[in-house]
Image (cartoon, rainbow, N blue to C red; front, side, top):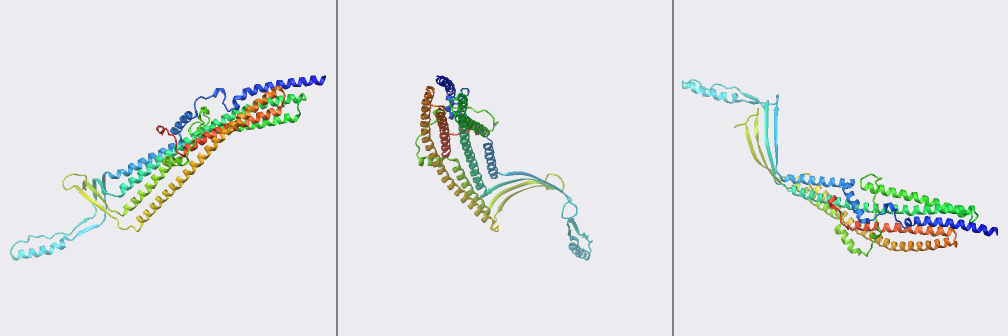
Length: 486
Protein backbone atom coordinates (compact mmCIF):
# COMPACT_ATOMS: atom_id res chain seq x y z
CA UNK A 1 0.00 0.00 0.00
CA UNK A 2 2.85 2.42 0.85
CA UNK A 3 4.58 1.59 -2.42
CA UNK A 4 1.48 2.45 -4.43
CA UNK A 5 1.12 5.76 -2.59
CA UNK A 6 4.76 6.56 -3.23
CA UNK A 7 4.33 5.84 -6.93
CA UNK A 8 1.29 8.13 -7.12
CA UNK A 9 3.26 10.91 -5.42
CA UNK A 10 6.18 10.52 -7.81
CA UNK A 11 3.79 10.43 -10.77
CA UNK A 12 2.25 13.68 -9.58
CA UNK A 13 5.68 15.29 -9.31
CA UNK A 14 6.58 14.08 -12.75
CA UNK A 15 3.31 15.39 -14.23
CA UNK A 16 3.85 18.78 -12.61
CA UNK A 17 7.39 18.96 -13.95
CA UNK A 18 6.18 17.91 -17.36
CA UNK A 19 3.55 20.64 -17.29
CA UNK A 20 6.22 23.20 -16.51
CA UNK A 21 8.30 21.90 -19.40
CA UNK A 22 5.26 22.23 -21.63
CA UNK A 23 4.97 25.91 -20.63
CA UNK A 24 8.65 26.50 -21.39
CA UNK A 25 8.25 24.71 -24.72
CA UNK A 26 5.25 26.87 -25.61
CA UNK A 27 7.27 29.99 -24.82
CA UNK A 28 10.27 28.78 -26.79
CA UNK A 29 8.34 27.55 -29.82
CA UNK A 30 8.66 30.81 -31.80
CA UNK A 31 12.43 30.67 -31.43
CA UNK A 32 12.61 27.06 -32.55
CA UNK A 33 11.32 28.00 -35.97
CA UNK A 34 13.98 30.66 -36.30
CA UNK A 35 11.77 33.71 -35.60
CA UNK A 36 13.20 36.71 -33.74
CA UNK A 37 11.81 37.97 -30.44
CA UNK A 38 8.63 40.02 -30.48
CA UNK A 39 10.44 43.32 -29.98
CA UNK A 40 12.52 42.86 -33.15
CA UNK A 41 9.95 41.21 -35.44
CA UNK A 42 10.48 42.70 -38.91
CA UNK A 43 7.98 43.19 -41.70
CA UNK A 44 10.27 44.66 -44.40
CA UNK A 45 11.60 42.14 -46.91
CA UNK A 46 15.29 41.36 -47.12
CA UNK A 47 15.66 42.96 -50.57
CA UNK A 48 14.37 46.32 -49.33
CA UNK A 49 16.65 46.39 -46.28
CA UNK A 50 19.67 45.22 -48.30
CA UNK A 51 19.08 47.96 -50.90
CA UNK A 52 19.20 50.59 -48.16
CA UNK A 53 22.43 49.16 -46.77
CA UNK A 54 23.95 48.93 -50.27
CA UNK A 55 23.19 52.61 -50.89
CA UNK A 56 24.77 53.50 -47.59
CA UNK A 57 27.85 51.41 -48.39
CA UNK A 58 28.23 52.97 -51.84
CA UNK A 59 28.26 56.40 -50.22
CA UNK A 60 30.57 55.66 -47.29
CA UNK A 61 32.72 52.59 -47.98
CA UNK A 62 36.41 53.56 -47.81
CA UNK A 63 37.60 51.16 -50.52
CA UNK A 64 35.03 52.46 -52.98
CA UNK A 65 35.87 56.03 -52.02
CA UNK A 66 39.54 55.36 -52.79
CA UNK A 67 38.57 53.93 -56.18
CA UNK A 68 36.50 57.04 -56.89
CA UNK A 69 39.59 59.15 -56.23
CA UNK A 70 41.47 57.00 -58.74
CA UNK A 71 38.81 57.79 -61.33
CA UNK A 72 39.12 61.49 -60.48
CA UNK A 73 42.87 61.29 -61.00
CA UNK A 74 42.33 59.63 -64.39
CA UNK A 75 40.05 62.50 -65.41
CA UNK A 76 42.79 64.97 -64.49
CA UNK A 77 45.40 62.97 -66.44
CA UNK A 78 43.17 63.02 -69.54
CA UNK A 79 42.71 66.78 -69.25
CA UNK A 80 46.47 67.21 -68.94
CA UNK A 81 47.09 65.27 -72.17
CA UNK A 82 44.36 67.11 -74.08
CA UNK A 83 45.94 70.41 -73.07
CA UNK A 84 48.80 69.71 -75.50
CA UNK A 85 46.41 70.45 -78.38
CA UNK A 86 46.21 74.08 -77.24
CA UNK A 87 48.92 76.79 -77.49
CA UNK A 88 51.07 77.70 -74.52
CA UNK A 89 51.59 81.34 -73.54
CA UNK A 90 54.43 82.28 -71.22
CA UNK A 91 56.32 85.35 -69.98
CA UNK A 92 60.07 85.00 -69.71
CA UNK A 93 62.33 87.64 -68.15
CA UNK A 94 66.06 87.72 -67.50
CA UNK A 95 68.25 90.42 -65.94
CA UNK A 96 72.04 89.77 -65.84
CA UNK A 97 75.00 91.44 -64.20
CA UNK A 98 78.38 90.33 -65.51
CA UNK A 99 81.98 90.93 -64.50
CA UNK A 100 84.94 89.99 -66.65
CA UNK A 101 84.61 87.46 -69.38
CA UNK A 102 86.24 87.36 -72.78
CA UNK A 103 87.66 90.62 -74.18
CA UNK A 104 87.22 90.95 -77.94
CA UNK A 105 89.92 92.88 -79.81
CA UNK A 106 89.11 94.65 -83.08
CA UNK A 107 92.43 95.69 -84.80
CA UNK A 108 90.88 98.60 -86.63
CA UNK A 109 94.01 100.78 -86.23
CA UNK A 110 96.33 98.07 -87.49
CA UNK A 111 94.09 97.55 -90.49
CA UNK A 112 93.29 101.15 -91.41
CA UNK A 113 96.28 103.22 -90.31
CA UNK A 114 98.60 102.02 -93.17
CA UNK A 115 95.88 102.87 -95.64
CA UNK A 116 95.38 106.28 -94.04
CA UNK A 117 99.15 106.91 -94.16
CA UNK A 118 99.27 106.09 -97.88
CA UNK A 119 96.36 108.39 -98.57
CA UNK A 120 97.92 111.19 -96.58
CA UNK A 121 101.16 110.82 -98.60
CA UNK A 122 99.24 111.06 -101.84
CA UNK A 123 97.51 114.16 -100.61
CA UNK A 124 100.83 115.71 -99.56
CA UNK A 125 102.32 115.01 -103.00
CA UNK A 126 99.46 116.99 -104.46
CA UNK A 127 100.09 119.85 -102.08
CA UNK A 128 97.02 119.18 -100.06
CA UNK A 129 96.86 118.81 -96.26
CA UNK A 130 96.60 115.34 -94.69
CA UNK A 131 92.94 114.58 -94.01
CA UNK A 132 93.18 111.09 -92.46
CA UNK A 133 94.18 110.81 -88.82
CA UNK A 134 95.30 107.49 -87.32
CA UNK A 135 92.77 105.52 -85.25
CA UNK A 136 93.23 103.20 -82.27
CA UNK A 137 92.49 99.52 -82.05
CA UNK A 138 89.09 98.85 -80.36
CA UNK A 139 88.30 96.28 -77.65
CA UNK A 140 85.06 95.39 -75.78
CA UNK A 141 83.78 92.73 -73.42
CA UNK A 142 81.84 89.80 -74.93
CA UNK A 143 79.34 89.97 -72.02
CA UNK A 144 77.42 93.09 -71.26
CA UNK A 145 77.94 94.30 -67.74
CA UNK A 146 74.18 94.85 -67.44
CA UNK A 147 71.53 93.21 -69.63
CA UNK A 148 67.83 92.39 -69.51
CA UNK A 149 65.83 90.14 -71.82
CA UNK A 150 62.03 90.12 -71.40
CA UNK A 151 59.75 88.36 -73.86
CA UNK A 152 56.34 86.75 -74.31
CA UNK A 153 56.47 83.34 -75.98
CA UNK A 154 53.70 81.41 -77.73
CA UNK A 155 54.11 77.78 -78.79
CA UNK A 156 51.53 75.83 -80.78
CA UNK A 157 51.92 72.25 -81.95
CA UNK A 158 50.96 71.92 -85.62
CA UNK A 159 51.80 68.27 -86.17
CA UNK A 160 52.62 65.96 -83.24
CA UNK A 161 51.41 62.35 -83.71
CA UNK A 162 52.21 61.48 -80.09
CA UNK A 163 49.49 63.80 -78.73
CA UNK A 164 46.36 62.10 -80.16
CA UNK A 165 47.85 58.69 -79.33
CA UNK A 166 48.43 59.80 -75.73
CA UNK A 167 44.82 61.05 -75.57
CA UNK A 168 43.60 57.62 -76.66
CA UNK A 169 45.77 56.03 -73.96
CA UNK A 170 44.38 58.20 -71.20
CA UNK A 171 40.80 57.85 -72.44
CA UNK A 172 41.09 54.07 -72.30
CA UNK A 173 42.70 54.19 -68.86
CA UNK A 174 39.92 56.46 -67.62
CA UNK A 175 37.26 54.05 -68.83
CA UNK A 176 39.19 51.16 -67.27
CA UNK A 177 39.22 53.01 -63.93
CA UNK A 178 35.48 53.65 -64.19
CA UNK A 179 34.76 49.98 -64.88
CA UNK A 180 37.04 49.01 -62.02
CA UNK A 181 35.06 51.27 -59.70
CA UNK A 182 31.87 49.61 -60.94
CA UNK A 183 33.40 46.19 -60.26
CA UNK A 184 34.31 47.27 -56.73
CA UNK A 185 30.74 48.51 -56.24
CA UNK A 186 29.30 45.17 -57.36
CA UNK A 187 31.64 43.26 -55.05
CA UNK A 188 30.61 45.60 -52.26
CA UNK A 189 26.93 44.92 -52.99
CA UNK A 190 27.57 41.17 -52.81
CA UNK A 191 29.56 41.47 -49.59
CA UNK A 192 26.92 43.66 -47.96
CA UNK A 193 24.15 41.26 -49.01
CA UNK A 194 25.97 38.14 -47.81
CA UNK A 195 27.13 39.90 -44.62
CA UNK A 196 23.58 40.98 -43.80
CA UNK A 197 22.27 37.47 -44.46
CA UNK A 198 24.98 36.05 -42.19
CA UNK A 199 23.86 38.41 -39.44
CA UNK A 200 20.20 37.44 -39.87
CA UNK A 201 21.16 33.78 -39.79
CA UNK A 202 23.20 34.33 -36.63
CA UNK A 203 20.36 36.18 -34.85
CA UNK A 204 17.90 33.40 -35.59
CA UNK A 205 20.43 30.78 -34.56
CA UNK A 206 20.78 32.56 -31.23
CA UNK A 207 16.99 32.46 -30.82
CA UNK A 208 16.78 28.75 -31.56
CA UNK A 209 19.66 27.81 -29.26
CA UNK A 210 18.44 30.13 -26.50
CA UNK A 211 15.04 28.37 -26.52
CA UNK A 212 16.83 25.04 -26.17
CA UNK A 213 18.81 26.38 -23.20
CA UNK A 214 15.60 27.36 -21.40
CA UNK A 215 14.03 23.98 -22.05
CA UNK A 216 17.08 21.98 -21.01
CA UNK A 217 17.52 24.06 -17.86
CA UNK A 218 13.96 23.15 -16.87
CA UNK A 219 14.66 19.55 -17.78
CA UNK A 220 17.69 19.49 -15.43
CA UNK A 221 15.54 20.82 -12.61
CA UNK A 222 12.85 18.21 -13.17
CA UNK A 223 15.38 15.39 -13.55
CA UNK A 224 17.04 16.34 -10.28
CA UNK A 225 13.62 16.41 -8.57
CA UNK A 226 12.75 12.99 -9.95
CA UNK A 227 16.15 11.64 -8.93
CA UNK A 228 15.73 12.92 -5.37
CA UNK A 229 12.40 11.11 -5.22
CA UNK A 230 13.86 7.90 -6.63
CA UNK A 231 11.94 8.09 -9.92
CA UNK A 232 15.00 8.07 -12.21
CA UNK A 233 18.62 7.07 -11.90
CA UNK A 234 21.53 9.52 -11.64
CA UNK A 235 22.75 8.86 -15.18
CA UNK A 236 19.69 10.67 -16.57
CA UNK A 237 20.47 13.71 -14.39
CA UNK A 238 24.07 13.72 -15.60
CA UNK A 239 22.95 13.45 -19.20
CA UNK A 240 20.54 16.36 -18.77
CA UNK A 241 23.34 18.48 -17.28
CA UNK A 242 25.74 17.51 -20.07
CA UNK A 243 23.20 18.44 -22.72
CA UNK A 244 22.55 21.78 -21.02
CA UNK A 245 26.27 22.60 -20.85
CA UNK A 246 26.70 21.64 -24.49
CA UNK A 247 23.85 23.90 -25.61
CA UNK A 248 25.13 26.76 -23.41
CA UNK A 249 28.49 26.50 -25.16
CA UNK A 250 26.68 26.47 -28.49
CA UNK A 251 24.78 29.60 -27.43
CA UNK A 252 28.03 31.44 -26.63
CA UNK A 253 29.40 30.52 -30.04
CA UNK A 254 26.17 31.64 -31.72
CA UNK A 255 26.25 35.00 -29.94
CA UNK A 256 29.90 35.45 -30.89
CA UNK A 257 29.03 34.70 -34.51
CA UNK A 258 26.22 37.25 -34.38
CA UNK A 259 28.55 39.89 -32.96
CA UNK A 260 31.21 39.25 -35.59
CA UNK A 261 28.65 39.33 -38.42
CA UNK A 262 27.30 42.66 -37.17
CA UNK A 263 30.80 44.13 -36.84
CA UNK A 264 31.77 43.03 -40.34
CA UNK A 265 28.66 44.56 -41.92
CA UNK A 266 29.18 47.82 -40.01
CA UNK A 267 32.79 47.79 -41.22
CA UNK A 268 31.56 47.61 -44.82
CA UNK A 269 29.20 50.48 -44.08
CA UNK A 270 32.06 52.52 -42.53
CA UNK A 271 30.32 53.16 -39.25
CA UNK A 272 30.65 52.13 -35.61
CA UNK A 273 31.18 48.39 -35.33
CA UNK A 274 28.53 48.01 -32.61
CA UNK A 275 25.88 49.99 -34.50
CA UNK A 276 22.52 48.14 -34.31
CA UNK A 277 21.16 46.60 -37.50
CA UNK A 278 17.63 46.41 -38.84
CA UNK A 279 15.99 43.00 -39.05
CA UNK A 280 13.96 41.77 -42.03
CA UNK A 281 11.44 39.12 -43.02
CA UNK A 282 12.73 36.40 -45.33
CA UNK A 283 9.95 33.89 -46.02
CA UNK A 284 8.70 35.68 -49.12
CA UNK A 285 12.23 36.10 -50.48
CA UNK A 286 13.03 32.45 -51.15
CA UNK A 287 12.32 31.73 -54.79
CA UNK A 288 14.25 29.59 -57.21
CA UNK A 289 13.63 28.76 -60.84
CA UNK A 290 15.63 26.82 -63.36
CA UNK A 291 18.42 28.72 -65.14
CA UNK A 292 20.12 28.06 -68.45
CA UNK A 293 23.88 27.87 -67.94
CA UNK A 294 24.84 28.97 -71.46
CA UNK A 295 22.57 31.99 -71.26
CA UNK A 296 23.92 32.97 -67.84
CA UNK A 297 27.49 32.73 -69.12
CA UNK A 298 26.70 34.95 -72.09
CA UNK A 299 25.03 37.50 -69.83
CA UNK A 300 28.00 37.46 -67.45
CA UNK A 301 30.57 38.00 -70.21
CA UNK A 302 28.49 40.85 -71.62
CA UNK A 303 27.82 42.61 -68.31
CA UNK A 304 30.74 41.95 -65.98
CA UNK A 305 32.67 45.24 -65.57
CA UNK A 306 35.94 43.35 -65.09
CA UNK A 307 35.84 42.20 -68.73
CA UNK A 308 35.20 45.73 -69.96
CA UNK A 309 38.03 46.98 -67.75
CA UNK A 310 40.56 44.61 -69.31
CA UNK A 311 39.27 45.48 -72.80
CA UNK A 312 40.07 49.12 -72.09
CA UNK A 313 43.50 48.19 -70.78
CA UNK A 314 44.18 46.31 -74.02
CA UNK A 315 43.14 49.41 -75.99
CA UNK A 316 45.37 51.60 -73.83
CA UNK A 317 48.38 49.34 -74.41
CA UNK A 318 47.78 49.37 -78.18
CA UNK A 319 47.56 53.16 -78.16
CA UNK A 320 50.75 53.28 -76.11
CA UNK A 321 52.49 51.49 -78.97
CA UNK A 322 51.53 54.38 -81.23
CA UNK A 323 52.97 56.81 -78.69
CA UNK A 324 56.28 54.94 -78.74
CA UNK A 325 56.38 54.86 -82.53
CA UNK A 326 55.70 58.60 -82.68
CA UNK A 327 59.14 59.25 -81.19
CA UNK A 328 60.67 58.57 -84.64
CA UNK A 329 58.18 60.75 -86.52
CA UNK A 330 58.68 64.47 -87.27
CA UNK A 331 56.97 67.14 -85.23
CA UNK A 332 56.18 70.65 -86.41
CA UNK A 333 55.28 73.58 -84.17
CA UNK A 334 54.85 77.33 -84.42
CA UNK A 335 56.79 79.70 -82.16
CA UNK A 336 56.16 83.41 -81.60
CA UNK A 337 58.44 85.58 -79.45
CA UNK A 338 58.06 89.30 -78.72
CA UNK A 339 59.75 91.47 -76.12
CA UNK A 340 62.60 93.84 -75.36
CA UNK A 341 66.35 93.40 -74.97
CA UNK A 342 68.72 96.09 -73.73
CA UNK A 343 71.03 97.11 -70.89
CA UNK A 344 68.03 98.54 -69.03
CA UNK A 345 64.28 98.29 -69.22
CA UNK A 346 63.25 100.53 -72.01
CA UNK A 347 60.88 100.28 -74.91
CA UNK A 348 60.98 101.74 -78.36
CA UNK A 349 62.63 101.40 -81.72
CA UNK A 350 65.90 99.53 -81.55
CA UNK A 351 65.01 97.79 -78.32
CA UNK A 352 61.79 95.88 -79.00
CA UNK A 353 61.93 92.71 -81.07
CA UNK A 354 59.56 90.05 -82.45
CA UNK A 355 60.12 86.71 -84.18
CA UNK A 356 57.90 84.06 -85.75
CA UNK A 357 59.40 80.62 -86.21
CA UNK A 358 58.47 77.23 -87.58
CA UNK A 359 60.15 74.56 -85.47
CA UNK A 360 60.77 71.15 -87.02
CA UNK A 361 62.10 68.25 -85.00
CA UNK A 362 62.81 64.87 -86.55
CA UNK A 363 64.81 62.29 -84.67
CA UNK A 364 66.29 59.76 -87.07
CA UNK A 365 68.22 57.57 -84.67
CA UNK A 366 68.15 57.08 -80.89
CA UNK A 367 70.18 53.94 -80.46
CA UNK A 368 67.11 51.67 -80.63
CA UNK A 369 65.42 53.14 -77.56
CA UNK A 370 62.16 53.86 -79.40
CA UNK A 371 62.04 50.40 -80.93
CA UNK A 372 62.63 48.84 -77.54
CA UNK A 373 59.77 50.91 -76.14
CA UNK A 374 57.52 49.64 -78.94
CA UNK A 375 58.40 46.04 -78.09
CA UNK A 376 57.71 46.71 -74.41
CA UNK A 377 54.27 48.19 -75.08
CA UNK A 378 53.43 45.37 -77.50
CA UNK A 379 54.24 42.85 -74.78
CA UNK A 380 52.02 44.80 -72.37
CA UNK A 381 49.16 44.65 -74.87
CA UNK A 382 49.59 40.89 -75.22
CA UNK A 383 49.69 40.53 -71.43
CA UNK A 384 46.42 42.43 -71.05
CA UNK A 385 44.80 40.29 -73.75
CA UNK A 386 45.94 37.10 -72.02
CA UNK A 387 44.54 38.36 -68.71
CA UNK A 388 41.25 39.13 -70.43
CA UNK A 389 41.05 35.61 -71.86
CA UNK A 390 41.87 34.13 -68.45
CA UNK A 391 39.21 36.30 -66.83
CA UNK A 392 36.55 35.17 -69.28
CA UNK A 393 37.28 31.54 -68.40
CA UNK A 394 37.26 32.36 -64.70
CA UNK A 395 33.90 34.14 -65.01
CA UNK A 396 32.37 31.19 -66.84
CA UNK A 397 33.62 28.90 -64.07
CA UNK A 398 32.20 31.23 -61.41
CA UNK A 399 28.81 31.23 -63.12
CA UNK A 400 28.75 27.45 -63.33
CA UNK A 401 29.80 26.97 -59.72
CA UNK A 402 27.36 29.61 -58.46
CA UNK A 403 24.49 28.03 -60.38
CA UNK A 404 25.37 24.54 -59.12
CA UNK A 405 25.59 25.82 -55.55
CA UNK A 406 22.26 27.61 -55.87
CA UNK A 407 20.56 24.53 -57.32
CA UNK A 408 21.98 22.37 -54.54
CA UNK A 409 20.83 24.83 -51.89
CA UNK A 410 17.35 24.95 -53.40
CA UNK A 411 17.12 21.17 -53.30
CA UNK A 412 18.55 21.12 -49.79
CA UNK A 413 15.98 23.68 -48.64
CA UNK A 414 13.12 21.42 -49.64
CA UNK A 415 14.77 18.54 -47.78
CA UNK A 416 15.51 20.68 -44.73
CA UNK A 417 11.93 21.96 -44.69
CA UNK A 418 10.55 18.43 -44.83
CA UNK A 419 12.97 17.34 -42.09
CA UNK A 420 11.88 20.22 -39.85
CA UNK A 421 8.20 19.43 -40.48
CA UNK A 422 8.78 15.78 -39.57
CA UNK A 423 10.70 16.79 -36.44
CA UNK A 424 7.89 19.13 -35.37
CA UNK A 425 5.30 16.41 -35.86
CA UNK A 426 7.46 13.93 -33.93
CA UNK A 427 7.93 16.42 -31.11
CA UNK A 428 4.19 17.05 -30.88
CA UNK A 429 3.61 13.31 -30.56
CA UNK A 430 6.38 13.02 -27.97
CA UNK A 431 4.88 15.92 -26.03
CA UNK A 432 1.46 14.24 -25.91
CA UNK A 433 3.04 10.96 -24.84
CA UNK A 434 5.01 12.72 -22.15
CA UNK A 435 1.90 14.44 -20.86
CA UNK A 436 0.22 11.04 -20.70
CA UNK A 437 3.26 9.58 -18.94
CA UNK A 438 3.98 6.87 -21.52
CA UNK A 439 7.56 7.98 -22.33
CA UNK A 440 10.41 9.04 -20.09
CA UNK A 441 12.30 12.31 -20.11
CA UNK A 442 15.18 10.90 -22.15
CA UNK A 443 12.92 10.14 -25.09
CA UNK A 444 11.28 13.53 -24.77
CA UNK A 445 14.65 15.33 -24.79
CA UNK A 446 15.75 13.29 -27.79
CA UNK A 447 12.67 14.45 -29.65
CA UNK A 448 13.37 18.03 -28.65
CA UNK A 449 17.04 17.76 -29.68
CA UNK A 450 15.98 16.37 -33.02
CA UNK A 451 13.63 19.32 -33.51
CA UNK A 452 16.31 21.85 -32.52
CA UNK A 453 18.80 20.28 -34.92
CA UNK A 454 16.25 20.31 -37.73
CA UNK A 455 15.34 23.95 -37.06
CA UNK A 456 19.00 24.97 -37.04
CA UNK A 457 19.60 23.10 -40.28
CA UNK A 458 16.56 24.76 -41.88
CA UNK A 459 17.76 28.17 -40.71
CA UNK A 460 21.25 27.64 -42.15
CA UNK A 461 19.94 26.20 -45.42
CA UNK A 462 17.45 29.04 -45.89
CA UNK A 463 20.09 31.76 -45.56
CA UNK A 464 22.61 29.75 -47.53
CA UNK A 465 20.17 29.73 -50.43
CA UNK A 466 19.78 33.51 -50.25
CA UNK A 467 23.55 34.00 -50.04
CA UNK A 468 24.17 31.76 -53.05
CA UNK A 469 21.53 33.66 -54.98
CA UNK A 470 23.49 36.84 -54.22
CA UNK A 471 26.70 35.15 -55.41
CA UNK A 472 25.04 34.12 -58.68
CA UNK A 473 23.75 37.66 -59.16
CA UNK A 474 27.30 38.92 -58.68
CA UNK A 475 28.78 36.31 -61.06
CA UNK A 476 26.31 37.29 -63.80
CA UNK A 477 26.25 41.03 -62.97
CA UNK A 478 22.50 40.75 -62.52
CA UNK A 479 20.43 43.43 -60.86
CA UNK A 480 20.88 47.16 -60.88
CA UNK A 481 23.16 49.30 -58.79
CA UNK A 482 21.99 52.59 -57.26
CA UNK A 483 24.52 54.52 -59.37
CA UNK A 484 23.27 57.81 -57.99
CA UNK A 485 25.00 56.83 -54.73
CA UNK A 486 28.42 56.51 -56.42
